[in-house]
Length: 365
Image (cartoon, rainbow, N blue to C red; front, side):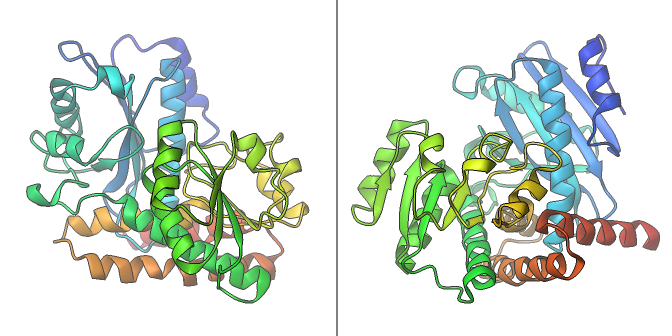
């Protein structure tokens, strides 16, 4: 591990005692001139260079930022393994308010930090960063994806992320109701940002009814204007998860959506959403299963975006990526079948499959 000079005791404790464990390298980055403070976490490079997005978020403490980077990087290792990509898992977080602190100078400094890793980490967009930001980062770092088509990239990866989640929902419907069709199903979406908005489009095109919520009123208004029929809004996630008749609940905002408070009151039969790290702590997956609710592992169903940005490194082809993202349907069904056969929750089944693939790769090396 590599540390910035003067790292606080809380940060060091987070690094050494994180229950995520097993990370190959953690880099604490600082550039005083631009105000950059960032964490780059590499969980595994067993399958290839670590690939994962850059999150820009106003963390309360540096230790919180490190913990999030560790958690997200580990999730990317599992996501990339299950997506069949030749990439390990990594993640970066930039500490700050993207609306106030994001500048060209800061992004260029961040690009230099990523470049200093010599290709061990490939970055892309995440919460708080966008295609235009990756165009700036790419000016100082050749290991940048998620760029605009004008700058040799594939553009917005949220399109295929939403498509993959939609395929995960279809697989979940097949497993629970014996039919992949979502027509007439009621789906609750918490968060209609970059991914959630596209997901609404897929659901409405098939004839599903959508109930949504978002902390940003303007995001809700935009989706309601695009879909004047078949879409209703509620005031909060707390209200959404209690909606009677909800078939599928889709967390599409930040992580930790499934915890000791929310799981006991869920009315949906299926949880399948785009948010990363939806399980707030170990054991939640069993609580979900004990309630008879099917959980589609988040890092499996939301892999469409990483499939897209990985393809960008080899000359982007949208139809090739879409065909690969469509296989999320089959992968999700495979996980449900493994979980049933082994008598374990789907999250545990997915972890086993991903860990086996990473172990096989390490052994082959």
